[in-house]
Image 1 (cartoon, rainbow, N blue to C red):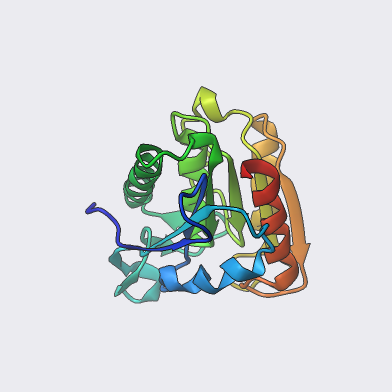
Image 2 (spheres, rainbow, N blue to C red):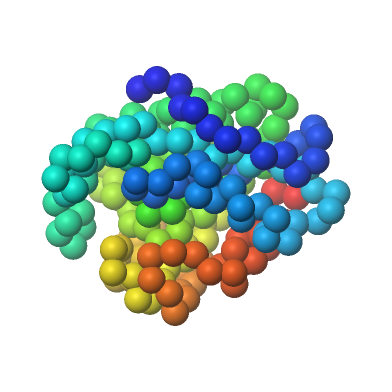
Length: 219
C-alpha cells in the first residue's frame, strides 16, 4: 500500500503528543477534523492530530463499489467477513505514520491510535501489535476483526483502551462492542466500555470523554 494522504492539525507549535484518528467506511480524514476544538484540551496542550484518508477499494457488501475503505468487507455476518490482508496492509501504512511521529520527536508513549468503525478495527490491530509502547487505543463504534490473529507486542500488553458504542447502532451492533471487551479481558487487558443512546455516530459526551482520555494518558 502506498503512503497514506492525511490532514494534520496542531493545537500548538512543537507538539509533544499525537493522536492518529482513522475514519469509517466511505468517509475521509475530514470526518473527525471538527472534533478537535470540542475535546476540551488545556490551552497549553501541544497535540498533533493526524487524520489519514483510507485508500479507494472495491467493497463487496456495497456491490463492489469503489470507495474509501481500510479493507474489504465480504459479508455482514455476526463477526464480519473481512479481507484480513488488506486490514493488515492498512495497519502497516498507519504504523508508518506512527514511525514518522517518533522521528519528529514525539515519544511513542504519547501517541494515541483512535478509530471509528472500520478505522477502529485497524486501530485494534495496530495499537496491540506495534513494537513500541503507545499511549492508548480509542475504539469507537467498532469491532475486533483480528482478535484471533493479532500478535500482541510485549510493549503494549498493558495499553489503556477505551471503547465506545451506540446502543441503537444498526451498522455495527452493540453486541460486537461488548464482544470486543470480553475478548480483550480474556487476553489480559482492562478496557473501559461506555455506551450512549445513539446510532452509528459519535456524541458530545463521548467526545468529551475522549478529551479526558487524551489528557490523562499523553499530556
